[in-house]
Length: 232
Image (cartoon, rainbow, N blue to C red):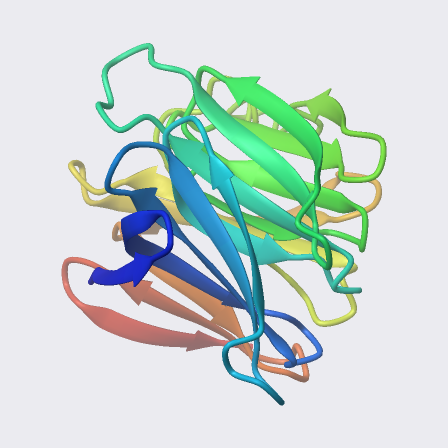
């Protein structure tokens, strides 16, 4: 859902939240009523009114991610009027000061993502493309995760529906497929070497993924039929 709040600069609509790994901060993102995006950083302890904020003069914030060491905050931005071929943005902020430290303009829409390490972030798009970039150097790598059978990370048919890493960040799990065709699958990768370790096909369209704190179990939810599957 959406929540509208009043600020000194006018109304804005909250569209996404992210909690820091240490649990002390909450990042809030969304769209300003007069145009542009906004990110706020709020304290979850002490003074509830203590916060930092930054207004963005383009698009609106669709998702936020804290790095594992809580030093960086990654924001996905989309245009207000989304048209085919419209650019999207990934912006990197210092998670304490909210100073922008990186910007990448994309022609594909990043739909999901996660951190491989404290400085390496991976994002997936509806077009099946995978982007990996260094949040410190603001250096992007193009499609390093490849599957010869599907040219994964390049021209794979279907959307990337979800991404997450194992608790020790040694493995990357990606869910892919097409809801329209009700077809999906999961790939398991070595997060450092980018080697494909295992691939499971012939699943219904996947809605989401989650992993247990121990890394022993992976849960998968599907659209049709609506199921919750638990894998070891």
